[in-house]
Image 1 (cartoon, helix red, strand yellow):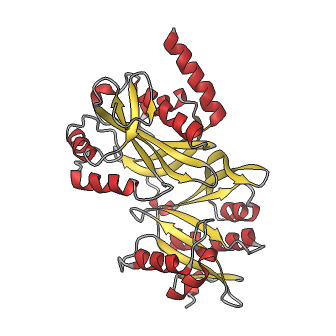
Image 2: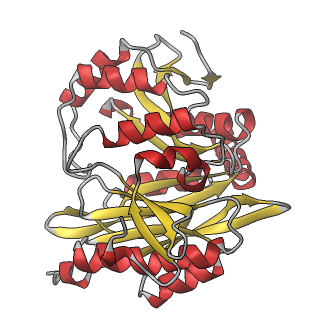
Image 3: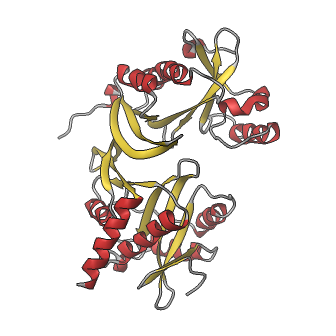
Length: 191
Length: 173
C-alpha cells in the first residue's frame, strides 16, 4: 500500500497525488455510464492536476478528496471525499465515485464509503454528514442507506434529464446512525 | 451607493467597496478572524474577473447610518439556480430580524426581476423571523438536515428553502 490513510479488507484510502490526474482522465475517457447530470464528459489531466493541487493548498482543508485503491496491487479505482467541511459546526457533505465501471455494484464502493465515514466520524470527529443523489441514480440512493443515511428531502428542478426537470435527493446521517449501519453491514458480510 | 431596488425600511444591500476591508467581521462569512490585509486580498480576488461577476457579494447596511451589519452572497454556476447565503455581524443583537428583511428584499429581486429559476437558502431552525420571511415569500421547505448546526449547549436543525419561479414551470408529458 502507498501512503494509506484508512485501510479496509479490499481497498484503502490515500491522499490524491499529481500522477492520479492522468489515470482519472483515462478512466473518464473509458466511462460507460450515461446517467450523470448531463452525460459523460472528457476530462483533461491538466485540469485534474490543478484540482488535486488545490485540494492540498488550504489547511485546514475545506474539501478532502481521497483515492480509493485496491489493497492487492494498488490500482486506483475511484475516489471518495468530504466537501464543504464546516470545522465549527463539524459537518460536511460526502461524495464517492468509482471511476472504473468494472468495480461498481460489487461492494468496493460500500467498503470505501464506510472507510470515509470512519475517517469523518472517528478521526476528524465530525457530527453529521449529508449527501446528495441525482434523482435518476437509484443505485446510489440505495447505497447510501447501507451507510445509515436517511432521506432529508429534495431540491427541486436541479437539472434536466430526458427533457424534464429532475430533483436532487438529499440524505443525512449522524455518527450513531452510521455506527449502527456499519455493524449491520459487517454482520451481513460475516454470514 | 444605495441601489433603489435593494432598499427596505431598516436596511439596504450594496456592492462591497474597497473600504469594507476595515470591518470584514461584519460581512465576511466566517467565524474566524479576518484582518484588513486579508479582506483586501479577498475583495481584489473576488472582483478581478471584472464583469460579469462570479459570486455576487453584497454588504447589508443600516438605512439610517450606513453601518455595515452583514453580508449576502449569491452563488450560481449557471445563473438559473442560485444559493443565497447571509452572514450577520457578530455584534448585531437583532440579526434574525435584519436577515429576515434582507430575505424579503433579495429573494423577489432574484426570482422576479432577474428571473432565476430557483433561489435556495439555508436557514437554521432557531432563526424564527427568517423562517417566517421565507414562508411569506412562498419559499418551500425542501430539506431538513438534523442536528446540523452547533449552538451553545446543543445543536439545531437546518432547513433548505427554495423559491421556484413559476415562469419556468413547464408541463410534464
